[in-house]
Amino acid sequence: MAYEMISFDCYGTLIDWELGMKNALRELAEKKNISIHIEKAPENYIEIELEVEKERYRKYSEILTISLKRLLKDVELSPEEEKIFVNTLPKWSPFPETREVLRELKDRGYKLAILSNIDEDMIKKSIDLIGIEFDCVITAEQTRSYKPSHKHWERLLEIFNLSKNKILHVAASYVHDIIPAYELGIKTAWINRNKEKRERIDYEFSNLKPLTEIL
Image (cartoon, rainbow, N blue to C red; front, top):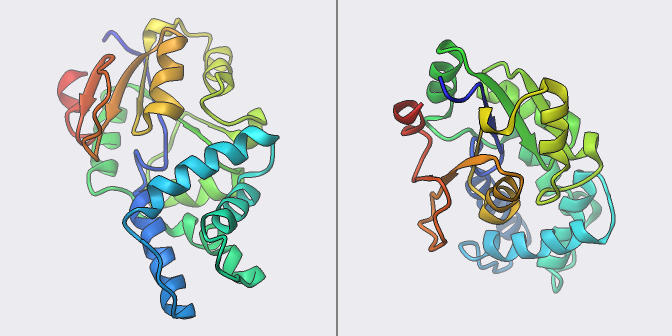
């Protein structure tokens, strides 16, 4: 077994972040009787969120609220409406193959970790939905930083005292995860669900299932 640890991003990789966001925005649009470009919103939101994260460290719940307000800058939102992502994100569903793939990897002896730009209380609820116990969960709240900062991986390496070549990092975000892991010399599996055109670094799959074939 070449790898000992398989680390995962959570939202967009294990949890269907895009569907959850679209559903929340659709609910908001119906409630306020406004028009929101739902299909384009996740892509626009990611760009905004990256800028907010660069400003200074804030808890992710605050990042979600600020980013939503900037995304819908022409819409007047109540304090409760501003928190629609905060309130719904812990309920967003895993991808259909998530639990099955994680269970097989765990049964085969791999250590499993999550490296996520999230708060502690929110990730716990998502892990409950996934239904698999992880050996390690590293959050932005712990590192006080957001990927693509290297601090999540540095903490993982410190905790387990592993060589970098013993870790495979699995993620959907090229910018937040694949590039920084590559910079650190950690092998990656890019879960390219949206068929983006990017330079392939190591592995590239359209979902999680092929992981069980290459490992």
